[in-house]
Image (cartoon, rainbow, N blue to C red; front, side, top):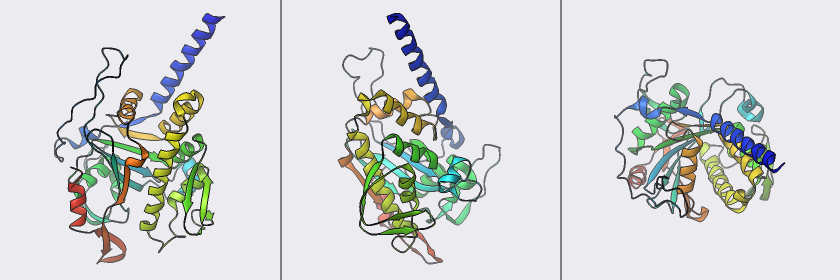
Length: 328
Protein backbone atom coordinates (compact mmCIF):
# COMPACT_ATOMS: atom_id res chain seq x y z
CA UNK A 1 0.00 0.00 0.00
CA UNK A 2 2.80 2.40 0.93
CA UNK A 3 4.61 1.63 -2.33
CA UNK A 4 1.38 2.28 -4.24
CA UNK A 5 0.94 5.68 -2.55
CA UNK A 6 4.55 6.65 -3.35
CA UNK A 7 4.14 5.63 -7.00
CA UNK A 8 0.84 7.50 -7.27
CA UNK A 9 2.31 10.60 -5.62
CA UNK A 10 5.34 10.52 -7.92
CA UNK A 11 3.14 10.10 -10.99
CA UNK A 12 0.89 12.97 -9.89
CA UNK A 13 3.87 15.24 -9.28
CA UNK A 14 5.31 14.27 -12.67
CA UNK A 15 2.02 15.02 -14.43
CA UNK A 16 1.73 18.38 -12.62
CA UNK A 17 5.26 19.33 -13.66
CA UNK A 18 4.59 18.32 -17.28
CA UNK A 19 1.27 20.18 -17.32
CA UNK A 20 2.71 23.42 -15.93
CA UNK A 21 5.70 23.23 -18.27
CA UNK A 22 3.43 22.70 -21.29
CA UNK A 23 1.31 25.69 -20.26
CA UNK A 24 4.07 28.20 -21.04
CA UNK A 25 4.33 29.75 -24.51
CA UNK A 26 7.81 30.79 -25.62
CA UNK A 27 8.82 33.39 -28.24
CA UNK A 28 12.39 33.51 -29.58
CA UNK A 29 12.89 37.27 -29.22
CA UNK A 30 16.70 37.11 -29.16
CA UNK A 31 16.74 35.13 -32.39
CA UNK A 32 14.32 37.51 -34.09
CA UNK A 33 16.10 40.73 -33.08
CA UNK A 34 19.71 39.59 -33.46
CA UNK A 35 22.54 41.84 -32.25
CA UNK A 36 21.16 45.25 -33.22
CA UNK A 37 20.10 46.01 -29.66
CA UNK A 38 21.30 47.95 -26.58
CA UNK A 39 24.26 46.35 -24.84
CA UNK A 40 23.71 44.04 -21.92
CA UNK A 41 24.94 45.34 -18.55
CA UNK A 42 28.04 43.70 -17.13
CA UNK A 43 27.12 40.44 -15.46
CA UNK A 44 27.32 40.47 -11.68
CA UNK A 45 28.75 37.65 -9.54
CA UNK A 46 26.52 34.59 -9.24
CA UNK A 47 25.06 33.65 -5.89
CA UNK A 48 26.42 30.36 -4.52
CA UNK A 49 24.09 27.38 -4.61
CA UNK A 50 22.03 26.88 -1.46
CA UNK A 51 23.43 24.63 1.23
CA UNK A 52 22.43 21.01 0.73
CA UNK A 53 21.66 21.47 -2.96
CA UNK A 54 23.20 19.09 -5.51
CA UNK A 55 26.83 19.84 -6.33
CA UNK A 56 25.91 20.11 -10.00
CA UNK A 57 23.28 22.83 -9.44
CA UNK A 58 24.44 26.05 -11.10
CA UNK A 59 24.73 29.12 -8.87
CA UNK A 60 21.83 31.54 -8.91
CA UNK A 61 22.30 34.74 -10.95
CA UNK A 62 22.50 37.96 -8.94
CA UNK A 63 23.25 40.64 -11.52
CA UNK A 64 20.97 43.50 -12.54
CA UNK A 65 18.05 42.46 -14.72
CA UNK A 66 15.49 44.22 -16.91
CA UNK A 67 12.17 42.60 -17.80
CA UNK A 68 9.40 43.89 -20.04
CA UNK A 69 6.08 42.82 -18.50
CA UNK A 70 2.96 43.23 -20.62
CA UNK A 71 -0.71 42.76 -19.86
CA UNK A 72 -2.39 41.69 -23.09
CA UNK A 73 -5.95 42.82 -23.82
CA UNK A 74 -6.71 39.94 -26.17
CA UNK A 75 -10.32 40.10 -27.36
CA UNK A 76 -10.80 36.38 -27.93
CA UNK A 77 -12.12 33.42 -25.97
CA UNK A 78 -12.55 33.74 -22.21
CA UNK A 79 -10.95 37.19 -22.28
CA UNK A 80 -14.02 38.63 -24.03
CA UNK A 81 -16.22 37.64 -21.08
CA UNK A 82 -13.76 39.41 -18.76
CA UNK A 83 -13.99 42.73 -20.56
CA UNK A 84 -12.10 42.18 -23.79
CA UNK A 85 -14.80 43.86 -25.82
CA UNK A 86 -15.61 43.21 -29.44
CA UNK A 87 -12.41 44.36 -31.16
CA UNK A 88 -10.29 41.75 -32.89
CA UNK A 89 -6.63 41.16 -32.11
CA UNK A 90 -4.76 42.28 -29.01
CA UNK A 91 -2.81 45.23 -27.68
CA UNK A 92 -0.49 45.77 -24.74
CA UNK A 93 -3.06 47.22 -22.37
CA UNK A 94 -0.46 47.41 -19.59
CA UNK A 95 3.30 47.81 -20.02
CA UNK A 96 5.90 47.85 -17.25
CA UNK A 97 9.68 47.74 -17.35
CA UNK A 98 10.84 45.94 -14.22
CA UNK A 99 14.44 46.73 -13.27
CA UNK A 100 15.97 44.49 -10.61
CA UNK A 101 19.09 45.94 -9.04
CA UNK A 102 22.38 44.05 -8.80
CA UNK A 103 22.19 41.81 -5.75
CA UNK A 104 18.42 41.48 -6.37
CA UNK A 105 17.43 43.10 -3.10
CA UNK A 106 15.45 46.00 -4.61
CA UNK A 107 13.55 46.77 -7.80
CA UNK A 108 11.95 49.59 -9.77
CA UNK A 109 8.77 49.14 -11.80
CA UNK A 110 8.31 51.77 -14.53
CA UNK A 111 4.89 52.00 -16.17
CA UNK A 112 4.73 53.18 -19.78
CA UNK A 113 1.41 54.84 -20.68
CA UNK A 114 -0.12 53.00 -23.61
CA UNK A 115 -1.13 56.32 -25.20
CA UNK A 116 2.47 57.53 -25.44
CA UNK A 117 3.41 58.64 -28.94
CA UNK A 118 6.66 56.99 -30.03
CA UNK A 119 8.73 56.20 -33.08
CA UNK A 120 7.90 52.55 -33.77
CA UNK A 121 10.86 50.88 -35.51
CA UNK A 122 10.64 48.35 -38.30
CA UNK A 123 10.08 44.94 -36.70
CA UNK A 124 10.62 41.42 -38.11
CA UNK A 125 7.50 39.30 -38.54
CA UNK A 126 7.25 35.59 -37.80
CA UNK A 127 5.63 35.09 -41.21
CA UNK A 128 8.58 36.76 -42.96
CA UNK A 129 9.23 40.35 -43.94
CA UNK A 130 8.93 43.21 -41.50
CA UNK A 131 6.63 46.01 -40.41
CA UNK A 132 7.13 49.53 -41.69
CA UNK A 133 8.54 52.10 -39.24
CA UNK A 134 5.97 54.55 -37.93
CA UNK A 135 6.31 58.00 -36.42
CA UNK A 136 4.01 59.49 -33.80
CA UNK A 137 2.47 56.04 -33.28
CA UNK A 138 0.75 55.00 -30.06
CA UNK A 139 3.03 52.80 -27.96
CA UNK A 140 0.55 49.95 -27.66
CA UNK A 141 0.35 49.53 -31.45
CA UNK A 142 3.80 47.91 -31.42
CA UNK A 143 2.34 44.74 -29.91
CA UNK A 144 -0.69 44.95 -32.17
CA UNK A 145 1.31 45.00 -35.42
CA UNK A 146 4.32 42.87 -34.46
CA UNK A 147 3.58 40.97 -31.24
CA UNK A 148 6.13 40.49 -28.44
CA UNK A 149 9.14 40.97 -30.74
CA UNK A 150 7.99 44.43 -31.84
CA UNK A 151 6.98 45.39 -28.30
CA UNK A 152 10.49 44.60 -27.05
CA UNK A 153 12.18 46.35 -29.97
CA UNK A 154 10.05 49.47 -29.49
CA UNK A 155 10.79 49.64 -25.76
CA UNK A 156 14.51 49.19 -26.37
CA UNK A 157 14.49 51.87 -29.07
CA UNK A 158 12.71 54.42 -26.86
CA UNK A 159 14.67 53.68 -23.66
CA UNK A 160 18.12 52.51 -24.74
CA UNK A 161 17.72 49.75 -22.14
CA UNK A 162 18.26 46.09 -23.07
CA UNK A 163 15.31 43.89 -22.09
CA UNK A 164 16.80 40.68 -20.70
CA UNK A 165 13.44 38.93 -20.56
CA UNK A 166 9.83 39.28 -21.64
CA UNK A 167 6.69 38.18 -19.77
CA UNK A 168 3.10 38.58 -20.90
CA UNK A 169 -0.08 37.70 -19.00
CA UNK A 170 -3.56 38.07 -20.49
CA UNK A 171 -6.91 38.98 -18.91
CA UNK A 172 -7.81 35.42 -17.97
CA UNK A 173 -4.44 34.69 -16.35
CA UNK A 174 -4.55 37.81 -14.19
CA UNK A 175 -8.06 37.08 -12.93
CA UNK A 176 -7.22 33.43 -12.23
CA UNK A 177 -4.05 34.45 -10.36
CA UNK A 178 -5.99 36.74 -8.03
CA UNK A 179 -8.61 34.03 -7.42
CA UNK A 180 -5.93 31.39 -6.77
CA UNK A 181 -4.44 33.69 -4.11
CA UNK A 182 -7.85 34.05 -2.51
CA UNK A 183 -8.34 37.67 -3.58
CA UNK A 184 -6.39 40.88 -3.16
CA UNK A 185 -6.90 43.82 -0.78
CA UNK A 186 -6.79 47.37 -2.14
CA UNK A 187 -7.76 50.79 -0.84
CA UNK A 188 -9.26 53.48 -3.06
CA UNK A 189 -9.40 57.12 -2.00
CA UNK A 190 -12.36 57.97 -4.24
CA UNK A 191 -15.56 56.38 -5.51
CA UNK A 192 -15.18 54.52 -8.80
CA UNK A 193 -18.12 54.27 -11.18
CA UNK A 194 -17.13 52.92 -14.58
CA UNK A 195 -19.83 51.27 -16.67
CA UNK A 196 -17.31 50.26 -19.33
CA UNK A 197 -15.21 48.15 -16.96
CA UNK A 198 -18.33 47.24 -14.93
CA UNK A 199 -16.70 48.43 -11.73
CA UNK A 200 -18.52 50.33 -9.00
CA UNK A 201 -16.62 50.83 -5.73
CA UNK A 202 -17.07 53.22 -2.85
CA UNK A 203 -13.93 54.86 -1.47
CA UNK A 204 -12.32 52.62 1.13
CA UNK A 205 -10.68 49.23 1.55
CA UNK A 206 -11.98 46.29 -0.45
CA UNK A 207 -11.19 42.61 -0.89
CA UNK A 208 -11.48 41.93 -4.62
CA UNK A 209 -11.83 38.65 -6.49
CA UNK A 210 -10.17 38.13 -9.87
CA UNK A 211 -12.93 39.65 -12.00
CA UNK A 212 -13.19 42.81 -9.90
CA UNK A 213 -9.39 43.15 -9.60
CA UNK A 214 -9.13 42.97 -13.38
CA UNK A 215 -11.85 45.61 -13.69
CA UNK A 216 -9.86 47.83 -11.32
CA UNK A 217 -6.71 47.34 -13.43
CA UNK A 218 -8.61 48.35 -16.56
CA UNK A 219 -10.85 51.15 -15.28
CA UNK A 220 -10.12 54.72 -16.31
CA UNK A 221 -13.41 56.41 -17.17
CA UNK A 222 -14.52 56.52 -13.54
CA UNK A 223 -11.39 58.16 -12.11
CA UNK A 224 -9.45 61.37 -12.62
CA UNK A 225 -9.72 62.85 -16.10
CA UNK A 226 -10.55 59.49 -17.67
CA UNK A 227 -7.09 59.09 -19.21
CA UNK A 228 -4.68 56.17 -19.06
CA UNK A 229 -2.54 58.06 -16.52
CA UNK A 230 -5.11 57.62 -13.75
CA UNK A 231 -5.39 53.92 -14.51
CA UNK A 232 -1.63 53.45 -14.14
CA UNK A 233 -1.82 54.50 -10.49
CA UNK A 234 -4.41 51.79 -9.84
CA UNK A 235 -2.32 49.20 -11.70
CA UNK A 236 0.76 50.01 -9.63
CA UNK A 237 -1.30 49.73 -6.45
CA UNK A 238 -2.46 46.30 -7.59
CA UNK A 239 1.12 45.17 -8.28
CA UNK A 240 2.12 46.14 -4.73
CA UNK A 241 -0.97 44.45 -3.26
CA UNK A 242 -0.27 41.24 -5.19
CA UNK A 243 3.34 41.16 -3.97
CA UNK A 244 2.11 41.49 -0.39
CA UNK A 245 -0.45 38.76 -0.98
CA UNK A 246 2.14 36.35 -2.36
CA UNK A 247 4.59 37.01 0.48
CA UNK A 248 1.96 36.62 3.22
CA UNK A 249 0.02 33.55 2.08
CA UNK A 250 2.61 30.85 2.84
CA UNK A 251 2.36 29.31 -0.62
CA UNK A 252 5.33 27.02 -0.11
CA UNK A 253 3.58 25.29 2.82
CA UNK A 254 0.35 24.70 0.85
CA UNK A 255 1.14 22.55 -2.21
CA UNK A 256 -2.44 22.54 -3.51
CA UNK A 257 -2.66 26.32 -3.40
CA UNK A 258 0.81 26.70 -4.87
CA UNK A 259 -0.23 24.49 -7.78
CA UNK A 260 -3.39 26.56 -8.38
CA UNK A 261 -1.33 29.75 -8.47
CA UNK A 262 1.28 28.20 -10.76
CA UNK A 263 -1.41 26.83 -13.07
CA UNK A 264 -3.17 30.21 -13.21
CA UNK A 265 0.03 32.02 -14.15
CA UNK A 266 1.55 29.53 -16.59
CA UNK A 267 -1.78 28.86 -18.34
CA UNK A 268 -1.87 32.41 -19.71
CA UNK A 269 1.85 33.16 -19.79
CA UNK A 270 4.03 34.00 -22.77
CA UNK A 271 7.77 34.51 -22.23
CA UNK A 272 10.97 34.77 -24.22
CA UNK A 273 12.72 31.44 -24.79
CA UNK A 274 15.07 32.18 -21.90
CA UNK A 275 12.17 31.75 -19.44
CA UNK A 276 9.81 29.34 -21.20
CA UNK A 277 10.26 26.36 -18.88
CA UNK A 278 9.59 25.67 -15.21
CA UNK A 279 13.29 25.28 -14.29
CA UNK A 280 14.12 28.67 -15.81
CA UNK A 281 11.18 30.40 -14.11
CA UNK A 282 12.06 28.72 -10.81
CA UNK A 283 15.66 29.93 -11.02
CA UNK A 284 14.40 33.46 -11.61
CA UNK A 285 12.06 33.16 -8.64
CA UNK A 286 14.76 31.72 -6.40
CA UNK A 287 17.12 34.57 -7.33
CA UNK A 288 14.45 37.01 -6.08
CA UNK A 289 13.81 35.28 -2.76
CA UNK A 290 15.38 38.16 -0.80
CA UNK A 291 13.41 40.88 -2.62
CA UNK A 292 10.75 42.13 -0.15
CA UNK A 293 7.66 43.93 -1.43
CA UNK A 294 8.76 46.99 0.55
CA UNK A 295 11.82 47.30 -1.68
CA UNK A 296 9.81 47.53 -4.90
CA UNK A 297 9.43 51.14 -6.11
CA UNK A 298 6.70 51.95 -8.63
CA UNK A 299 6.97 55.00 -10.90
CA UNK A 300 5.57 56.18 -14.22
CA UNK A 301 7.66 57.31 -17.15
CA UNK A 302 7.56 61.14 -17.05
CA UNK A 303 5.24 62.40 -19.78
CA UNK A 304 3.60 65.61 -20.98
CA UNK A 305 0.62 66.24 -23.20
CA UNK A 306 1.44 65.75 -26.88
CA UNK A 307 1.38 69.05 -28.82
CA UNK A 308 -0.19 67.29 -31.82
CA UNK A 309 -2.97 65.53 -29.91
CA UNK A 310 -4.26 66.49 -26.46
CA UNK A 311 -5.52 62.94 -25.95
CA UNK A 312 -1.98 61.55 -26.21
CA UNK A 313 1.28 62.03 -24.30
CA UNK A 314 4.99 62.11 -25.14
CA UNK A 315 8.05 61.45 -23.00
CA UNK A 316 9.02 64.43 -20.86
CA UNK A 317 12.67 65.23 -21.36
CA UNK A 318 15.20 65.24 -19.85
CA UNK A 319 13.39 63.50 -16.97
CA UNK A 320 12.42 60.40 -18.98
CA UNK A 321 15.92 60.03 -20.39
CA UNK A 322 17.45 60.36 -16.92
CA UNK A 323 15.11 57.65 -15.60
CA UNK A 324 16.03 55.18 -18.34
CA UNK A 325 19.74 55.99 -17.94
CA UNK A 326 19.50 55.02 -14.26
CA UNK A 327 18.35 51.53 -15.29
CA UNK A 328 21.16 50.76 -17.72
